[in-house]
Image (tube, rainbow over all chains, first blue to last red; front, side, top):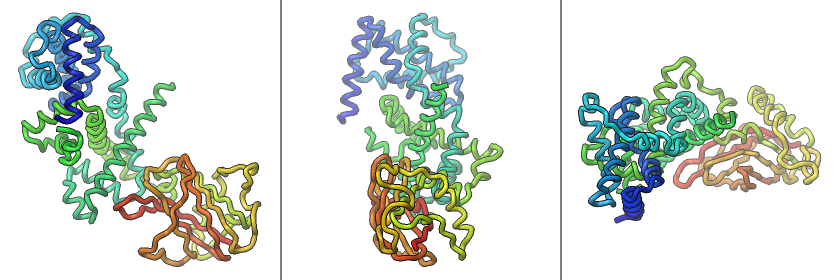
Length: 197
Length: 218
């Protein structure tokens, strides 16, 4: 098992145990830990932000109720359980099902769990055209602009682009890596500006 | 699954393009909900994909806003290198008043550097533009470039006589990093007109030109 998996298993065990024992703080920690990823995968699968938000909320309600009442047979597999719950809710005919009559405190936990953890994603979502436009204008080389455009916009393959532009894969990866990092910085700067207002 | 596996197998892009099989996609989802670093990659890649479409589709798109040569330099990631090039010449007061008859347009684009850039070092530190140091040709010239930030591993500068080609395959000296991304280079030159080309370098890649300017020594 690698260190990431080791760390995850250790943290998961602790969270499951504490939630089973009635520790409300542990519930908030669980939501903070998995919320961002669950929201992302639901958005990706559904292509519907509102639906993804509903299912995200539902996922944590189900998970927290289960952990409070029964715990998990294998607490190390908490992430798998959270994931499976989200996917099952997505797959199921959720719109036809009555929403669970969840406890108000669970709703609050999900709603209030560390909004800053998703701030970057929110900025990227709302301001992305503006940020990407700025990013493109800052690129030094026409070739890099063309690479990004064709990779992200036209979804051409890395292999194909490397051959055409006579680039090695490392260089290609660096262009993409820099673009992402620069976009992240632009988004973070924008976030700081918003907070300062 | 771990980060290395994700990067090596390009799972971020393949997931976003729906190119993973069902089992592999689920395994990746289970991994990324526990990995903030991969979540960053996913969100940024998705924002680039969507943002690119939005930016290209909207009026005044990036495609329609290709920067001019000067604008490109002013907006390059080494942007302040262009906006705040401070040249401290230990030789000639009119160092940057150079006019190159052969290419007046190019000289004109250099004017903002000379006019707008603040000195990195104050007079109290022994530097004033064109007022300190020897005045004869062949004396040391110190070029100081305030570059803000740079994500290159290192930088190099090539200084060539105006009108000549940059030689291929010739190594050039590294620029000394002063801190905060500022660069310094000291050289001795005879009288004449020169072009300085500043390049960013990363191992295994061709150097990328990030700034170019002309100057004259009398």
